[in-house]
Image 1: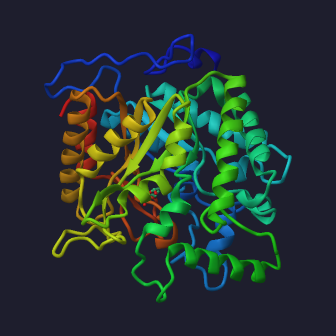
Image 2: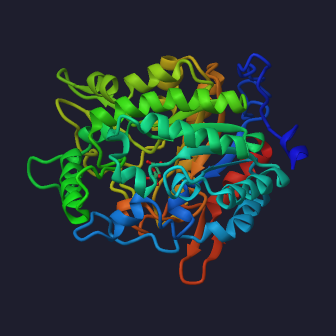
Amino acid sequence: MAALAVGTFHQGFAANGNPPSNVLSSGAGQGFPAKFLWGAATAAHQVEGNNINSDTWLLERAPNTMYQEPSGDACDHYHLYEQDISQLADLGCNAYRFSIEWARIEPEKGFFSRAELEHYRRMLEVCHKRGLTPLITYSHFTLPRWFAYQGAWENPESADLFARYCDKATRHLGDLIAYGATFNEPDIPYLFHWINFPNAPVGMDLAGIMAAQKSALRQYLNAPQFSGFLIGDAVKTRENMMAAHTKAKAAIKSVKNIPVGLTLAMEDDQAEGVDSRAAEKQADVYGPWLNLAKSDDFVGVQTYTRSRIGAKTLPAPQGAELTQMGYEFYPEALEHTVRYAAKETGVPVIVTENGIATEDDTRRVEYIHRALAGLKHCIDDGVDVRGYIHWSLLDNFEWIFGYRPKFGLIAVDRETQKRTVKPSAILLGKIAKNNSL
Ligand code: BGC
């Protein structure tokens, strides 16, 4: 196993821990930088199935839950990972981003399951065997139930508990991890304040809806401290997650000096009118995280659409094409957020998520073409971008929206678990193989 750990990463980091400067393969032609990461992403709870020790499993099944349906077996990626990872490699990609599940690894406070760590080790080994650089997320929204019962990120001990988990996981897996992200989109709770939610009760924003869910859950579970990532108090959650990132990064690096960062949900915020609050939104949602990322090895950018901001967040323009999520189809958003994140942080950017929910794969094909054309403009202008990881590898469990939105490059028949590769997957694989548009 140790032999797999050396020499298989697509991107090495210098002895001082700093990423090397990228070498452009063909200047302003169609080519991307040498060793560019091309791949797709998943998150444990959305694909593995039966993540029963997680807070989200509980939330999905609570009365009056916001979840349209429970996750159940999901895509059974827990058992079918080898075929899924191999498929990604067969397409021509060279990277796989996935999350390891804290609720499986530490199902009871202080008990770390060697068997579950071995499971993730096997996944990492398959990645290396198939020439895929693994990018690991230590926490992609879901939390162990016990952690949620103790207040989740509202608990003052949460940062230390998370750092301990990251330490244990890195001791077991670190030699096979190429890139580590502590958190997926920790800026989401603040972003909620700026999103219009179609069916919200009058005067209530998404953040208000989440707070209402939390009190209902606390009552139902008779658990006065119960909280979670999305339903948590945004201020306390941010404070503790920022501390957790710093502590976890130190814990990971003291075991293995892999490049560590975090990934951010970033909308392309476009100012409309003289009273636009776009700058205020950027400072409120991304500001503190981008500042923290300045001392990281990279920043993960995750962009789906734009948001037009006047005195408040405006709806998509009249007649605009909408995706299954109700977002505007706007692939150019990626170019803008990548430029913004690179400028604000000064560290290399990896696009760790980008995609659309649609039943019509021809729209995904178009989206990928246009998003990547924008990304190429950034690179041609000297922006240090290291990879493009599409969301998502599989049609999967889209949180409160259940299985209806189709983000996958690969369709999944949830009855039989049969996979069907879509044309968009072939396109991405071809671009990856050519390292060129
Ligand atoms: C999340 C994913 C989610 C995707 C599409 C991101 O916010 O990281 O878990 O499925 O967007 O909505």
